[in-house]
Image (cartoon, rainbow, N blue to C red; front, side, top):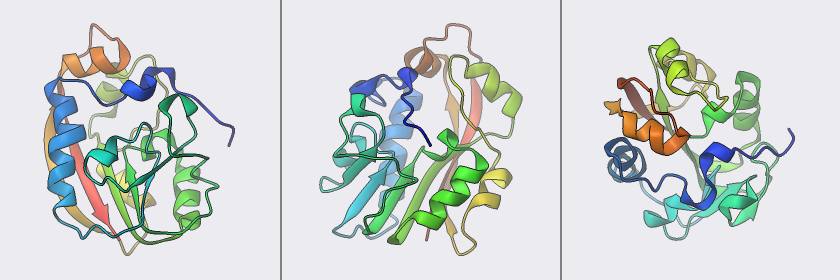
Length: 187
């Protein structure tokens, strides 16, 4: 897969917005989810962008293909070969098509995997709100069909995607407020 930079992700400022949706996605829910698992010593944050996970796990290693986010390791997670005690995939799977998601789980070398991903039951509305970006949004059922069979859902919560979130994230002025669901899975 060629290196792809997503300009809408805004480099090192990604996920640092102050709207209610961003606070839930990048702070509150992460704290809630991490409280449900034991954090080992060697943690990789796949697609970890600008190191947002370090607020919660200071020793985590961010691995990303986007050098504008200044990751600890500049690499393609589909090809990354190092082994870890825990690999975290937080808001990564919508960047990958179904084939790439399956490939990713075949290549991850870790004792445990934590997946944190939003799902959308109204995909038409999600795509309407996600102008200026090309991603692979999924329903909960679609997401779970791609995950390893031994994985367990440890967190599920509905939340509201606000207009401010889309304005901060994508510069969209005419988005429609809607609900999404946040899922966390642990293997």
